[in-house]
Length: 292
Image (cartoon, rainbow, N blue to C red):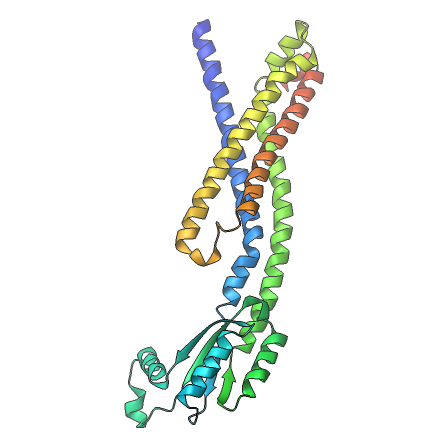
């Protein structure tokens, strides 16, 4: 009978520890993903900004050598990430494919112009700098017109600032939630052993002696939960790197090391502090209060 009860207690204890580890891992996993998003906010915003293109339409009178010279100048310009030449023939073929019919056959001629497509560096993607780039380009005698999506620039700038602000707010809020949830899980784990604590206290064990194994177990659970969370975040990063290599998720190894170290430290510190307060609470309870 005593052996079956002992086995039952061990199963119950393992189940309690497992639920604590899962709770810690899930909370830290979500918190780590949020931290990763904060670290990569600039990279992600830069990626979207650098999709913005300035199209420089060229005059019909522009000679090939002049176009090559302009392309070379733009390629080395401080604001330019990449420059692509698009001939009027290529533009017509793409436009015909987009609308599903040959518009040249209908019009009798190709009204499109040769153009240079410039992908602008992220630092220059704002209303003021884009206007300055446009003003400098239109001065060239070979340039017919400069075109870019002005409303999109304003929308990108405003939304990125707004999203960055809310990410920081949400990060602070979620950190608080993480502390509360991990603390609750640890308290439930210690609560299941409240009678053991009181028994040890009644036979003369000191508070420090009673607390020590609980604190050590708390550190172990925190370490294990943090490790599981880090492995999960690593798996998500591996998938993101395969799916969206442009965000260069593995590039800044130092910041990633700090993030993983912070997750590990947070998991251990929160469980340690939670275990300390939980054991202290049950050590200070009277025997009759243990049933409530």
